[in-house]
Image 1: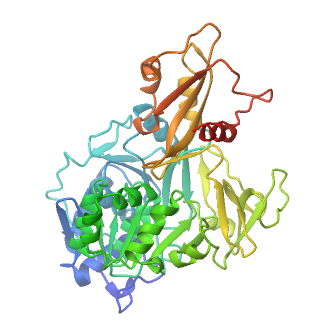
Image 2: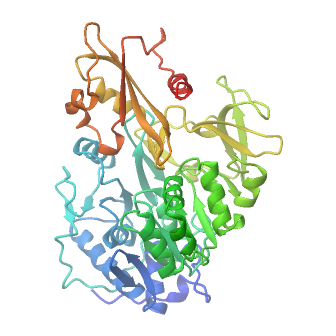
Image 3: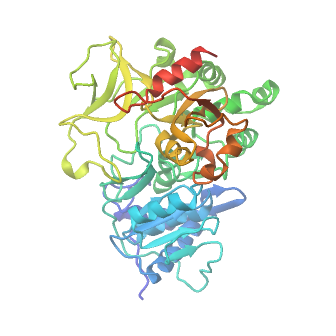
Length: 506
């Protein structure tokens, strides 16, 4: 095969920023061609220049092509944070295939269900989890020696990517991003300039690290990703790499803030211009700690989702004037609070938070596999409850009425409840989140026992077989047993009322 000639000017402006419409895979190659020795990626002990990262990614893309991956296929990616995760993402794009990152923490049954939904041409992992797919590539055992690292021809994936998560029914859900894998306004951010240094602490299969690890590489930025979050190590990495932008979830912010005061005071955080946080509500005392530590104008909180149906943003200094708010929407979005019957509610009234996004046509709207959307005419919703004040600032009343956010991870109770209810002695189960100083919420299971079944002394032992059917991070931290009915005559479990009663009881 003839060596691919790369015209950098086709993909980058003279100042090195991406051109709209440039294929994502070619942007990595373009930065390698014009500033190849610059550091691109740091994860753990590994540090790769743009030239090294692009060449390794091109080799991996060719290895995927040898396994039959082609334009329009899907590549599932499942492994802990490591350089091969990002290489696999870009390798899929270089072939015009859709990357689909999934959590490596899922149990085999959950992974198998996702495989059935995704139908990947190839699964890329590191051997830490096993797949049913026969066409799986283990990067830990893979040798790319003898495979060319030269740039590949331009290719575009359309749709651009697939993000997997748990659905509101407790079953896996896939969110398909219809926007092709080319640079454009959907990928750019005013708060993440080109050619900076970013630091990400979260798992790469989430949307936030996508925005601060995958996308910055296309802008020529240096990306530092933690293998796993540890608060003292985070401080060390900030001092070593001097990031411009960092992303955290509130649990991480809390763990850093609660380190010994001498340690946090001594740490030099002066390089941080943007601390971006989302995924859960941040406790006010923790938010104020960070405002005092790095400055209110540097802290940005965002409310939104993978589906991009709408968003709000609030800066720290705004938050001080409107404590508890998640901000206002941009001019392209309008917030509408609706009641259960779909009628619009006035300021101050709690209802479902809906967005009306202007200029969103059928070709740019997400779609689900494994779940139904909440689209109603011009309105769409994440399913959260909240209200707006007289000034248009949004406040969250409940993060999706049934969902529990634990350490920034969305967990839906239905799957956990279904597993516990498989026990012969159980009639019904309701899983709720109770406040936790470290995690934000902890999972608590309220179990309705069958008549004649005595409450066990140890819920973990009682449900040992059932708990093995769900991932460890989804397992309840505590159990409560009752013979009172949990469901009403309509078959509904009022989880909000159950949670309120237990918080009120201490």
